[in-house]
Amino acid sequence: MMRLPPFRYLRPKSVAEAVRMLAGEGPTAMAVAGGTDLYPNMKRRHQMPKTVIALRGLQELKGVDGTRIAAGEILTDLERNARLRAEQPALWTAVRSISTPVLRNMGTIGGNVCLDTRCTYYNQNHEWRRAIDFCMKCDGTTCWVAPSSKTCLAINSSDTAPVLCAIGARLRFQSVDGERVLEAKDLYRSDGIDYLRKRPHELLTGLLLPKPDGWRAAYLKLRRRGAFDFPVLGVAVCLEFEGRTVTSARIYLNAVSMSPLEVVEAQKAVTGQELNERSIAAAGDAAFVAAKPMDNADFHLHWRKEMARVYVKRALDGLRPR
Ligand SMILES: Cc1cc2nc3c(=O)[nH]c(=O)nc-3n(C[C@H](O)[C@H](O)[C@H](O)COP(=O)(O)OP(=O)(O)OC[C@H]3O[C@@H](n4cnc5c(N)ncnc54)[C@H](O)[C@@H]3O)c2cc1C
Ligand code: SF4
Image 1 (tube, protein in one colour):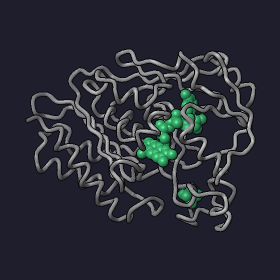
Image 2 (image 1 turned 90 degrees about the horizontal axis):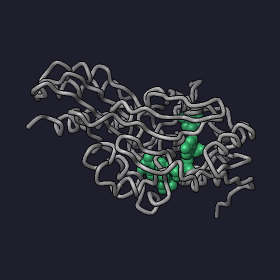
Image 3 (image 1 turned 180 degrees about the vertical axis):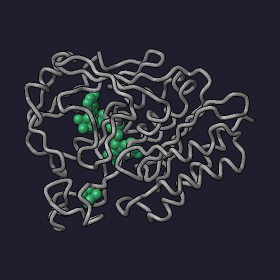
Image 4 (image 1 turned 30 degrees about the horizontal axis):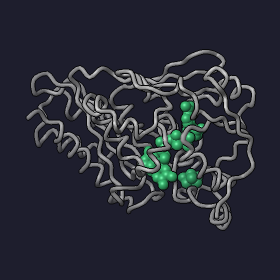
């Protein structure tokens, strides 16, 4: 059985106290919300904070108010939110596809946005990793996926991240220095180790979604088991139309690179066009070219690459004005 390592557990009574604690403890402290990612990582000795600052009891991090979602909202509550389902169907679909009902009862949207990157050579217990002499992301020096790579290629596996990027959501961060608002697309770095532009002493406090005023979005997820499993490909598409013509397109792939990947050529293929077989096929081809999955997740990488084409085409087809 894997056990948690020893750590100090702090329970702030407010966001202000939490950010003071984070700043005071320094980079050896981490926030925990639902703990469904951090605690397994601590058990496998990937992430070893000396101090854990618990956000679960903070009422300030709870609530949904139209287009504002507090970071501590539990995934199950979002899944049951009828307004979110009606107004933000792509985000709702992504939330609903995260892990399992039991884990969604604990996990939060904030934890999902800040999820650690994943890799077959990393998400293993300590003994397994020791047997391969560890790897560059944790305790070692070599990347076993691409030994000549200077960058860790662990993948962003959050279901909500690509949707938030595609719909143009913004994220609110709080620290002892004050508040900072980032575009979701600017949070993620193309580096499996240093994967977030969040500063260590910042807390994510909320998500600001765009108003549902005509744009349409979709999320599709590829995984082995439909009721469980991280994505090995996520496709998020957000389109605006004038009549039947696409006036703006944002298309993101996830789980095929270290951060959500904007597929500019696929966006160009449909912008200014009607969604028809030709423009949709061109966007699918562009997604195929852009997707560069590595051999560090479930399924064969060539098949995942091919599925990027299929899923982008499916997502666009589903958004066609009927
Ligand atoms: C078996 C299993 C299957 C899973 N399947 C999926 C899946 O299909 N898709 C998916 O996306 N995820 C999946 N997950 C991962 C996880 O359950 C979810 O991503 C969940 O939303 C994480 O939220 P949490 O509140 O539990 O995060 P935590 O574990 O509490 O935190 C995760 C990370 O975010 C940081 N963090 C949390 N809240 C904040 C905040 N407010 N401000 C700053 N940093 C913060 C923590 O420090 C930590 O680094 C799975 C996990 C397991 C164990
Ligand atoms: S991509 Fe390479 S360095 Fe990163 S976790 Fe996997 S094996 Fe380790």
